[in-house]
Image (cartoon, rainbow, N blue to C red):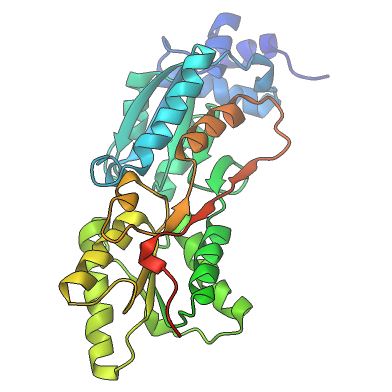
Amino acid sequence: MAATIRDVARAASVSIGTVSRALKNQPGLSDATRLRVVEAARQLGYDAAQLRPRIRRLTFLLHRHHNNFAVSPFFSHVLHGVEDACRERGIVPSVLTAGPTEDVIQQMRLHAPDAVAVAGFVEPETLTTLVAMQRPLVLIDLWAPGLRSVNLDNAAGATLAMRHLFEQKYQRVAFIGGSLAHFSIAQRALGYRRAFFEAGLLFDPSLEVTIDAGLDPDTGAALAMQRLLDASSSTGQRPDAVFAYNDAAALAALRVCLARGLRVPQDIAIIGFDDIPAAAHATPPLSTLSVDKEALGRRGVELLLEDSPAELEVRLPVHLIARASTSVKKP
């Protein structure tokens, strides 16, 4: 016979109401009581899904590395999508930024959310902590096995960018990437390498550079572009195009190339990813992969609220926006 809420209450020596509050992650209980109830339910095999609460409060968790919206506006648009979806459903959203040294559980206790949306990179330890809290959870621009997640089709987008460059007769294409601990960046790097194989071209590992850890995309990408150009000055084989993992990095690379007296795209083409507003206003305008950043946030909330989703992992399409920074190269 399946365990009942009364069985859990008896095993944990608490009232039925306390069991309900504990398993719904509602405020008003000590951590010790909540953990005792959760452990009793686990040992008895009680299905806490029977008490799945209506979600009234959602916390949007962002790593401190991502919270400078002025420098990296991507996640501000994702947040707008989350806020819109919450507003339509009567959910109150809050924003929490946290780094690896901060007590996420304590911060979550202050927010008292019914559910959590994690956006972008977080340390594995932080994600493990969030999963252990047993609140409904969705990952946005992030992936982990067995968890609900919404991502762009990053690998396909990178392949689109590379095919576009190959069609314009560029072949020595460099890649400026960030930490491969970021799921989206790792997928874009995978698409970059795969494109060479699909085009039947040789891949030169020396053309793939990574931004130094701890640097923002602007500074890191500028230094990475300088390293690419400095290395080519000794070999005589400068890259004829650059694919950067996001637009902020691409725009930094563009500025370095122009400062070195290179013409874009005549001497070197540049393409980014994300289509932030600054991309269209650059000189020359930056080619990029257009993504619906608000849709990422909206779809994350939708997936979070589904009782039995058809798929745990959702991928949203991206679209090539060809601008002057990769115009047709003369043969």
